[in-house]
Image 1 (cartoon, helix red, strand yellow):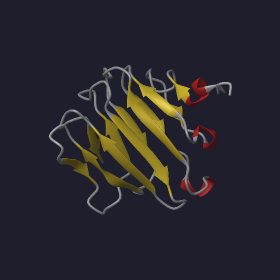
Image 2: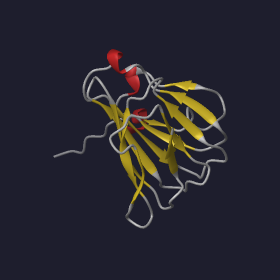
Image 3: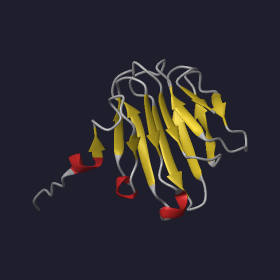
Length: 137
């Protein structure tokens, strides 16, 4: 039986979250992994009403960013928790939605966050090697 190769690079974006220009995440970005690096930047998530249940993407630090990356939903509809370096719960929405999640400049290579929707709210699940990698507002 022969091997089958797929174009797996199509789901990796090393450029969109690596600079200081605003990036608007698209419906078509579902399933994509964004490699995070570079300076401060605003990343706008699409309105959940425009997305199908199960839409998701992942943000992974390919290098420690030199500025905070702000992922915004436009309203307080983001819920979830972060596991920090001590395997403790870090920043949490504690059942109350937030508008923004920040990937802090203090985050390290390999820190990651999954974002997904049920069609009404956004949910995050993140893990970091430090206590200050992610914050919410």
